[in-house]
Image 1: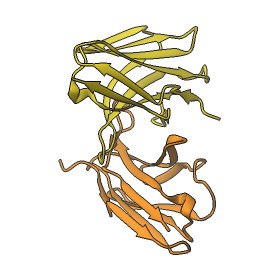
Image 2: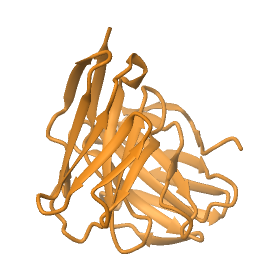
Image 3: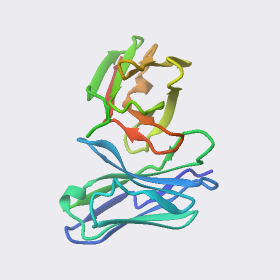
Image 4: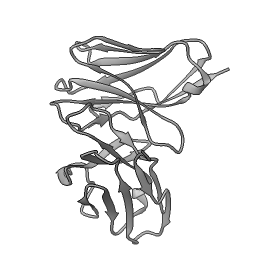
Length: 114
Length: 112
């Protein structure tokens, strides 16, 4: 299996622009997670889906952030409009709920908002 | 409010010695704890875990200890190797779901 796939790996954009991050989970996994990593707060859970349904979005910072999972093999995290404080590494992870607790992480998207 | 805390942002150890990484938590509902390891430009990878019904779990060079009364867990790496140099994240969960709460990480550097 290719593991969790994220794109793009790096994104540089200007403040005010829309940013879309993409994730393909491991085939057969039914839970998908979006995290943000910063020095100050470590790995923060933004939102997670189970069977394509958002279960907990309490970590989404504000209305500028939105996430979708239209099917079991694809999810997006969108920031509109982006701000410099959104600069971070964004990780997607997937797991099979009900079969162990291990989450498998993608390589991350490093976002820089100028 | 940081429910899982790793108070040491960095740790330096000599090759062959023991590395001890510490983690404290505040939520007494947590019943399962995990350690993840992260290399630069890669995502975190699962290393070892422990259930709250145990106080120790061992896997090769890695041992996790849990002290529920102190709400503290630690990861011991013996002997430490240069390839162990990475950021280590402590994580916790409760209630049987898959939601993990992570700490801020500790950068371990194993020197020759």
